[in-house]
Image (cartoon, rainbow, N blue to C red; front, side, top):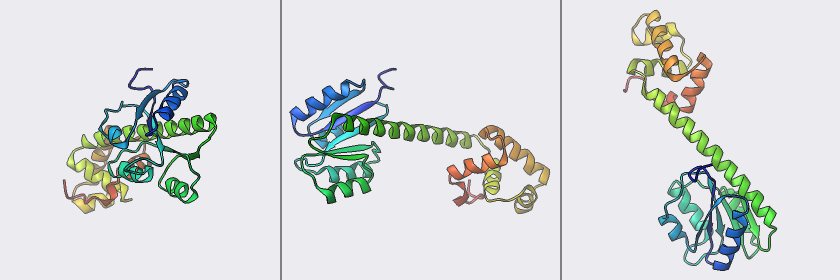
Length: 212
């Protein structure tokens, strides 16, 4: 596994002794570990292009972990977060989980509980990255279609049959089928239902077929 593919865990805690202890723990499971004393240094860092998650202290000087959770969302940094806290705070933990945190662990916690949360976070980020890659590939394939082929794919996604599409855009039904067949080949769609699902993932039904 290359450095780019090796999962990464980002520790953000203002306590150096906590950072060191967690770094040793995470290195034992073979992941890359990056430590930060503040959220600002994390945001300025160059992060590897690999599945990752964040272990975040809920109480940080200047900016709370919950505030930083919102910042990450606003900046479209979708890394899963595991919160750690020295104080049991139920309202805070509820808010963190509602906003998508993987886990909220109160010190002292079992190492295995934290490692389990890390594995879950990395698994979720890996799945997100795979989904994003597949969607980008699908968008690229859609980008190879001609304007007419795109128009017909959108009409198919709206549930229109070839005869209706032909009447709508003023071409022969046989021509519609030719364009549809070419579009399916370019999109790697093996059936009309699969082409429809691709269109749904691309959210094409909200587009106007005339505007290309």
